Length: 225
Image (cartoon, rainbow, N blue to C red; front, side):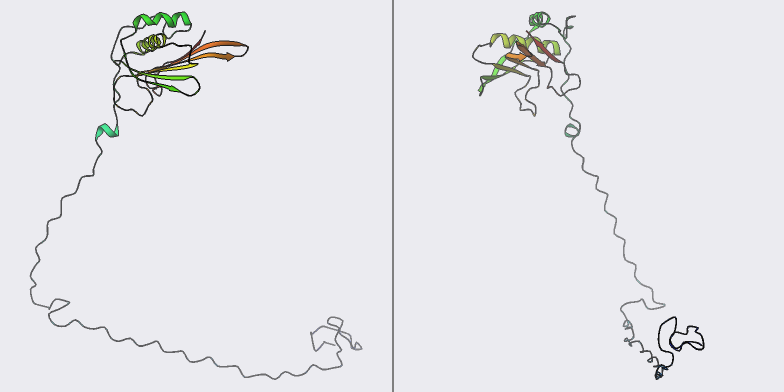
């Protein structure tokens, strides 16, 4: 016996469906079928006005009538791209002049070797002196462009001539022109620090740089006594 609700197979004596559990003695109501709705007619596309034909004498040229040719305008010459001056694109640093050969003890590894370089020091003029907070003093000196070992000798000579127990730090900055520079110094620098504690010892320290301190061939020296 087939269930009128779910179509499940049951025995002929069964009253309830083993599949859906409904009473098979009650027949399900017959559903009225509604007629299938017909698809609406397609809506015709909107009509657009016909394109306007150009009037005589305008728009397209008339067939068989020669048209006057317009003279061609010469193309403007190409504008070359603006280039920055070579001096701004690739600034050429001032070359270091050749001078006497450095002594065999350069760069120095001891204070004795450092002090012997003073014999090759150049003449200089003091351009600026400034006292800073913390017993610190900065002096800018002007002298000609020279080799690294002559820079060290001139800076050390200026430090010895301006040494004072009043200051714990004395900085001598060398320049070779009075023009302003992005660097603090262009011709070397020496920094002297008094009573620097290195472990259990108290020493004086000398820190020296040649050039402007950023060049690849700059010499850097650190010694203590």
